[in-house]
Every structure is written in structure tokens, then in C-alpha cells.
Amino acid sequence: MGDPGESDLIGKKVAEVPLGIFASEKYLAAHSAPQSLSELKDHDIIGNTNDFITFRNVRASQKPLLDYFSAAAESRSVVRVNPVINHFAAAGLDLGLALLAVPFAQAEGLVQVLPQEVATMNVWLLRRRESDLRKLTREVRRFLESEFADSKAWLSGDNRGQKIVRRKS
Image (cartoon, rainbow, N blue to C red; front, side, top):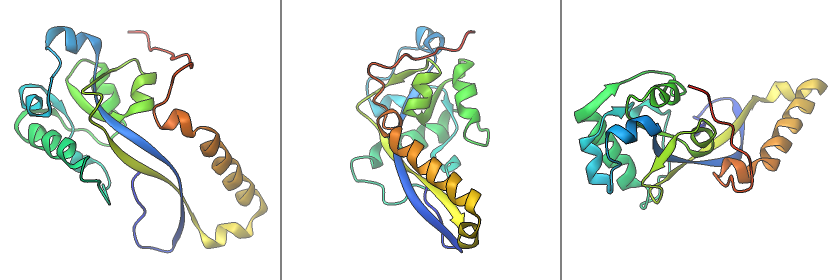
């Protein structure tokens, strides 16, 4: 996730994934959920926006979320782990608030706070031009593109009507 850099890779944007602020139910039972972005500074923060590869072309409406989350992380970061996938585990262990991909955090049973505040990140499939020379690689690429196309609603965080499997503690 993120945006591809300048290189010899060919990229195709296959989805946009919303990011939101999540915590476990147990963390929120012990700490009241923030009611505004400015209240993030009163919470334990997992990670930082700098942990993500890049946020290019950030919409003006998304900038406050990223700025407030980053400022809160600078003052009250409880854990910084990479890769970013570890932020899900830290939130699931009740360590604080994390900026996470909405559909995956929902699938983990985490609770979104400030649901009106989201940022989006692009999902790209990257390949080298020479990989198109192999039939199997072309077939895998087409399969992945098809799967992403079929999963756009889920990736966008629209999980209505879908059963969410919650992790057992």
C-alpha cells in the first residue's frame, strides 16, 4: 500500500483503502474514546504516520487527521513497531489507538473512533516489464487484478451485510 516510487516497475492502482483510528474494546473501556482530533493527545498512540511508506496527494480534508495523529504520536507514542502490520497486533493487545486500514481493523474486531475522520491510501500491483514475458506471471497478475476489482466494496470499508470474523482473545 502506498504509492510506487520512480523506478523500473510498472504499477497499476487497484484500490483505495480508507485508514481510520482504531482501538480494542478493552482499551476504550479503560479510556474514554476521543470526541475530536485534538483529544488524541490524551491517548496512548501506536505508531506514527511516518511509519507508512508515503501519503502522496493527500486531500486537504484528510490532512488534519494525519497532522493530529502525528502530533499525538510525538507526545504520547507507546510503541513504534514496523512493519505497519504490527500496529494491528498492538491495538489488539489494548496498547492504544492506531491508524489502521479500515476493512482489516474491522475484521480484527477493533473499534473505530472518530469514524468521520479517514484518510485513504492507494493499493498498487507492481511488476517488472520482463515479468509479462512469462505466461504464468501474466495469469497471476490478471487473477490479482480481478480479485481486487471484486473486493472494492470490502476494501473501501463497506462491510455491510458481510459477516465479520472476530479474533478470540
